[in-house]
Amino acid sequence: MVRWIIFLLIFGVIDFYAFQAFKTVARNNYLNILYWVLTLLVIGNFVYHFYGLNRSDFGTSHGYAFAFLIALLVPKMIILVFMFGEDIIRIPQAIYRYFTEGRSAEGNYMPSRRKFVSQIALGLAAIPFASILYGIYRGKYNFKVLKYTLHYKDLPDAFDGFKLTQISDIHSGSFDNPSKVEYAIDLINEQQSDVILFTGDMVNNIAEEMVPYKTMFSKLNAKDGLYSVLGNHDYGDYVRWESTEAKAKNLDDLKTIQKEIGFDLLLNESRFIERNGERIAIVGVENWGAGGFKKAGDLKKASSNVNAEDFKILLSHDPSHWEREVIQDDYHYHLTLSGHTHGMQFGIEIPGWFKWSPVKWRYKYWAGIYEELGQFINVNRGFGYLAFPGRVGIWPEITVIELKKGEKIA
Image (tube, rainbow, N blue to C red; front, side, top):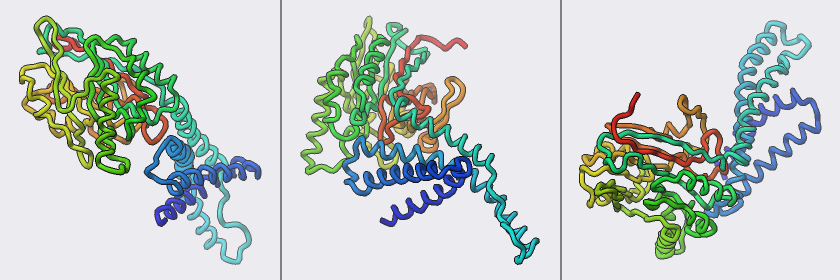
């Protein structure tokens, strides 16, 4: 209860300043009433879902309650900055006038709010407001195919031009538009890659979430197969189970679904793709994440049948694994494919020039291609979405990587 009181107090301060700007510009009692009606509806809906209902039953309605709160809160915080900044000027002016004109002098000592400051604040606040609404209704299905070419001197000749497609973080329990998902699956198949690699988090929590989409994902096709690993959400660690047996059965059900779709699920295992007497290794570890995340991944076990000189593609859901264990490993993993971060589903990207997201403060490697010690990692921004039902600036990703023999030509 205390935390909700604190939350409402903070929101009250933000709203006090936001309303000052709104009423200065609107100057209409009906619009002012509409402002408060909308605000109270959004806050009430959020409190109802996250306090009035069982928090463990997180679902789509919870996500939208959270999303609409963010859509309202972020623009108001921008307004707060401008209005509070104006008060830093207004209040000293009022104090100065009060003491210089004398206490008995008539008149209002506090300068009135300037309309143009409120207009600027509202105009700038409209940008994130519109962006968040777009992200909720369109951005979460704004699939992008990102293509890269990576060069390796030790790539087997038979695999020069080998093309792979990576998808990650499906989070099927969040989907609310099957036709958009089907469009994305067709987009994956259109790439005609040699292999499709999935790097974990098929569901939010339970295997049943994937059942409505099983037939749809069964259409995925690649001549050298489909391979996958588990992500932290696939283990069912974030919901309450009636028994350990029920939790174990859920994981077994998810493994069965992956098999029925056509994925070869690698549980600290490896496979080989062979061509003309040469081979590359596909190595897959269970989830290994820094901090409090599950550390079921066993790199040594997964590579026990792989030779040091083999060309290796590693599937590992969490990029912190690459940073903490993979880079320095003696085996030299040529390419690691990860996901997990979602790029926080929020950020700014100008392809080939600039990318930023708050998630960079948590993960050093959070989106795209990185190189360390002659090894590459691609951190996929994710196919689906989680918690916040949208994406702003960081779009859902289908990665296509072509492997080339030799050094990159500048």
